[in-house]
Amino acid sequence: MSVEFCGLSLAHPIVNGSGTFDAIAAQRAFGDALHERFPFAAFVSKTITLAPRAGNPPPRLWEAQAGLINSIGLPNKGLHGYIAQDLPELARLRVPLITNVMGSSAEEIAELLRACDRREEIAAVELNVSCPNVRTGLDIGSDPTQLERVVAAVRPATSKPLVVKLTPNCADVGECARAAEAGGADGVSLINTLRATALVPVGSRSGMRGRAVPWLGGGSGGLSGAAIRPVALAQVAAVARRVSIPVVGMGGVQSAAHARQFLDVGARLVAVGTESFRDPSAAARIADELED
Ligand code: RRO
Image (cartoon, rainbow, N blue to C red; front, side, top):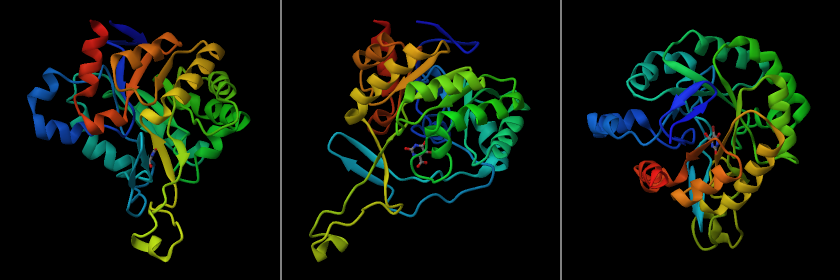
C-alpha cells in the first residue's frame, strides 16, 4: 500500500482534499486517538493567503441532491497567523504536511513559497489556482499560457515539492496540466469544485416574492461530492494521459471502490473531501478497504 509521491514516502494512497478536514479541531476533540489512527497518509492544509481574509458572508453552504455547494471564500489567518498559530499544531501530526497556498500574483505566490521553504515542518506545497469563490486565482488556473508563466516564475522560490491544484472550470484541463508541468510543477491535483449556484426555494426568504434568488452569501459557489465523480474521473484520466508527473485525483470519493477507479485511470494518490464532512473517519475506512 505504501506509495512514493514527489519524493515523499506515504503509508497508503489516501490523503485529504484541502479545506475538508480540520486536523487542529480533530486533535482537540480526539487527542492521541486521532494520531493512532490518522485517516490520511499526508495532510493537506486549508488554503492560506499572504494577508488574513474574513471569507464570504453567510450562508456559505447548500446541500445539493448529490453533493455540497460551498461559498466559503477562503477565510484564513494569513501567512503569519498560519505560521505562528497553526503550524505548531499541524507539526504534531505524524504524517507529512502539505501546505496549500494561493496568491493573486506571481510575486505574492513566490513570497508564500519562500516562507514555506524555510519551515522544516512543511513537506510540500500545493498551489491553489482553482478556488471558484474568489475572483483572483481562477483566471491563472484556466489559462494554460498564464499558468505556465506563473508556475515557472514561482518555481525557484521553493526547493520543496510543488503540486498545482487545477481547476475543472476550464476548456481543456489536460492542457492546463501540461502547462503546470512545463512550468516546473512536481505534481498536479484535481478536481477542485465545479462552479455552481444554489437558489432560494420560492416561498422562503426573499424567494417569497416568487422569483428565485441566490442562496449563498457569496452569490455562487463550487459543487463537490458524489455528483461530480464522473466529471472528476474523466478529467483525472485526461490529465494522467497528458503528463508524466504524479496526479492526485479527487471528486466524490466515498468508498474504496471509488478510490480504486481514480487509481485505475492514472492517479498516484486519491483525496477524500466532502465525504469527511459526513463521516470524519471515512478516509480511514477507505484506506482499510483498499488494503483488503
Ligand atoms: O474557500 C473556498 O471557498 C474554497 C476554496 Br479556497 C477552494 O479551493 N475550493 C472551494 O470549493 N472553496
